[in-house]
Length: 436
Image 1: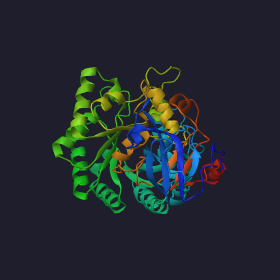
Image 2 (image 1 turned 135 degrees about the vertical axis):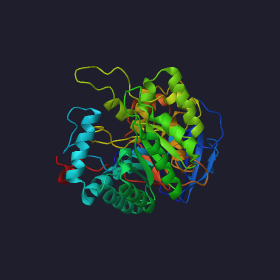
Image 3 (image 1 turned 90 degrees about the vertical axis):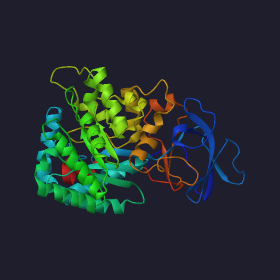
Image 4 (image 1 turned 30 degrees about the vertical axis):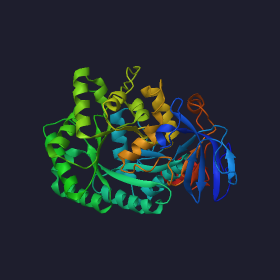
């Protein structure tokens, strides 16, 4: 097993004593310092039985003294690409650009994405995420025909197999331009509905955009589906599909959940234009997911030139306007992002740096816990609350400076109050499908 900084009692009832909790991820009311509260957490029969002031837990219970180390709920990672994961060794991005990624993935998908190939890489990714402490994942699945039927079938099987470890959701990802093929779109909607997924897609400016959005939202409404879109993943200030999405939601009176990922161009627009869109997004109830690591990797990349901006959306402005916001991993070791391991701690640490979510850090923990869980329609998960499963991640770090300065590789993950094996899968397991 991976080295851990402590070993909680292997008992039906025990206490994590003298723990530090991110207040935003728990309903426990106590005086907070930098958004952190102190507590004893009582665990009984796999559930959180009580959250008490430190030092007040029943004396007869076995105890693990956290020595003020942090306890977080398991993480929610709601914008990933499990179907693309780990193809970098066999199909790297030739130049690190968005177009280079798009072309490389397209060629690899057509040549290699059999059910067996997709399954092998998905399972590897899920084993990594589970070991890091993730309890909820939403993945976008490339859904150009015939891939939509292959990948959604594999996903449905894996979702059932993993239901006791990670709750899984899937979104159909395809260019909205392909909606002109009515037979394809009807079949895609049928597959998504049958597999309990979400409708998604890649939006771009054009004369058919309003028709595409109206048709997509109508199909979603008629089939009881939520929507999660890839939006304005560009440095072009003229890309305003986020505005069009918000207008379409309002125009169609769509009452399902709508999520927009990336929204990079919003940060390239003048203040007045951006503010009008932010206000529309709030009015329409659209949630926004920022993907800071992937966007830093791809955006503003030009050969021989140092990037001039960070590639991320107006995260603070959106949150200040009341828009539900979160961050997520996005791609993992594929042409869209060459790195990553589906570790929300890494995502959180990088997001704090890239998006300047510090000074203060009081509510920052929400971006990988409660906020993405709410966006995913699972508001009771990724939260430390009485009655919830004791799905927790324990850290030696006591304060933000300690937490953000190291990768926390010695963390302990509890599922239903039991320590899991945090050993990560060996990349050599993938040699047979992606090469060394």
